[in-house]
Image (tube, rainbow, N blue to C red; front, side):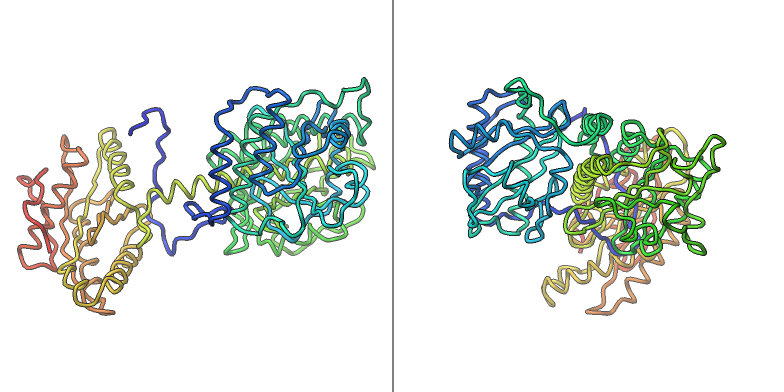
Amino acid sequence: MDHPSAPVHSPPRLRMGKRGHESSGLSPGAPLPTGAENRLQEFLQRWGPTGVEPLAASQRTALLEIAAAALGASRLGLMVLGPDGAFHGEATAKVGAAPARHFRRTAVSLSELMSAREDRTQSPPPNGRYFTPSDPLSTSKLRLTTNSDPAVARRLLWIGSGPQSPPAVLVVEMSREAVTPDSESERMLTTIVADRLVRVIKPTGSGDRGGARSKISGTSSERRLIRGLLEAGASMHQALSLDEVLQRIAVILGDAGGFEAVAIYILDAETQLLHPAAIVGVDPADVDRMQSTPVALADYRPMMLPSMRVGRSYLFDHRKHRMPTNTILDTALTVPELPADWHHGQWHPLDSLTIPLELSRGQLLGLISLDRPRDRHYPTPGTVGALELFADQCAAAISRAKLYRYMEELALTDSLTGLHNRHALEQTLAQDLARLERVWGPYSVLFCDLDDFKRVNDTFGHAVGDQILQQVAAILRQRLRRGDFAARCGGDEFVILLPDANTQQAGLVAEDIRQRVANTTAPCQITVSIGVASPARGGLDPRKVLDTADAAMYIAKRSGRDRVEWAKPEMEGTKKLAPTA
């Protein structure tokens, strides 16, 4: 079914080298084990459509009970960020009347939540983290029972913020013998449950019940920062493009976070290079220089020493630390001039705050570098805690954008060869020909078909046939230019798009590909027949262009195979009349 209003995403051009996928914490299409699958199905059936309107207390309790069953929790509590900057108890499930009343009167500051110890026994889902609260915190505020039971495992799970919902925390209690297994399917299940909850849960102002506002730690400016960051951050969860997500994060940190200069680095897990992906408040010439000079993570480590730790972040204070010299940081980082009205005790141009973007267990996505706070003050621990909470949500949004990009790429990729598939071919060819209608230029299409490939499968087996298809795909990658496009159309057919190549140039490419395939002997020798076609003015219909190249390839087959044939004007739009071998 077509969706005309859906955005059209251009598939990337030929990938040079082996295709890799970025880790997102989820594998699209991965089957859920029976236990998680059953609980997920039951959860979705019981949940039903709820919309996004605020829910009554009875509805909250019912939904939390459904969520508790899906998570395998013996008790569940929900805390939502209130207007005073504290997280207030909102609702409980499977909790007695007295503990439930106590929980709904509970207010916990951000700094208290951030002091909770991260639980290293489980990998958290992409949208949150599991924590084991410190003893004083869990004993005094977050316990969902009246007694301290050593057999109970307690977890705190951030469930982030949606476009119309405040950040929230789930307090999960379960038997230590029944702790949710550390598995991908369980994390996926938790993600779905948390996403459903955050869409329908709205604060009820529980922090004001009883006529007394909670006294939380932190200054009013820190509370305003928390609210500003998290309210503004709702927009980044709506973005699906990774570039858009990163740019929104940078702008939010500049506007709501109060920093004039922001740089977001994304880590390439394979090369361990930090690539500047979004930059705000930096001179354009410096932006160009930064983007052309990725920084090795090892080279950035001098700005992230243990002595610089503030929470999970690193504050480089020029009064305590020396700027590294004779490293790539000398060229990658710009030190602005000292303001004329600067005085001691204010933020210095050498200073910087670095916040890691992490998914879980130190899985580093990148870094956020903040500079030049507008008030010129060094950030307090509470301010850093607020920024780290926002960074956790940023990491979740980045992970989600990467997953979306991976899913989008997966839909346009042939799983066996790593080349594009027929859907990507049709999409790209239509876009290229539409561009030719506006600006005419040379353009060619190669239609390739392996010779006697059925005989190869029948003689050597499909495993050998698959290996040959992968070898042919590798030959195409090696031969084609960066702007060229190669796709497997199914079976043993390949199509190559050559922008800016006339018929003669395309013929040279085709002949070179034919020779390379013929010279490939392992595991058995194979040849290819190739048809070359170049669209004429007025003949820019994608289907006709492909049919013309296909017809030329069929002439090569009938002329003895292992040949290159050029389409003739009378063949335009002609489709082959008989099967090829």
